[in-house]
Image (cartoon, rainbow, N blue to C red):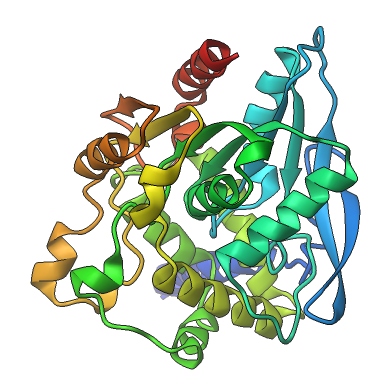
Length: 337
């Protein structure tokens, strides 16, 4: 009898472990209050769409001998400026000044209740930040959604972008034109409210890392999930729904032929990211997110493009294999310099 009771208590204890782990996961404020950034956060105050906003950014001076160049790092939709932690340090050591902003609606920046999100507006905000810092020319590096934004910044303000680097950018295909059905912001908001650590991890493991997972990735999942676990969950989810619709209806791939600056494409071949594929017919979903093919097509469209494929890597090569990624990045930056 005692053995049976002990066994039941042991089983009950095991059942409590997932709940205990969930309770220990961090909860952050709507502007990521409580999360530790790798460098001090500064604030760019702006008035946009008739409201005062605050754009958070890191401004990291060269740790090595300054080479006179500035690199702007633009995060993806499921990332923050902090995700560039290792890249910031590598570039700083090589003499670059590094600017890593959080876009309005994301991470440590303002979460406006009413805002018309567009890639052009976010590009305008970023250009305003650079102007306020006295930066006339910069190399712009964009990852994921940040790649779409970097391309829009380069198209709208070509005089300020001396080199463009696109790291597994989304938007290398027009999902709506490919047959993915539209989803309203209200519908997307309903889905965003269901977001938690496990859902973020499952999505990233499947689409970003080809089914693999490393413990160090948990930090970046906690970073995102913590905002959904905190008191600002509703506004975080609303801004995320708005920006999901933004990237779906504002493709930049059709304008790649207008890019005039040297452009470096760093493409992980195991990436299968395709926003909206989950609501598309199976035949459509199966052909989306083919990054080896998408990278080649994008390079053919851009007049001064250099394609560097990483066949064994996924959506976030800078996180998955930082040494391989940074070697290619530095080589590409030096060739343009």
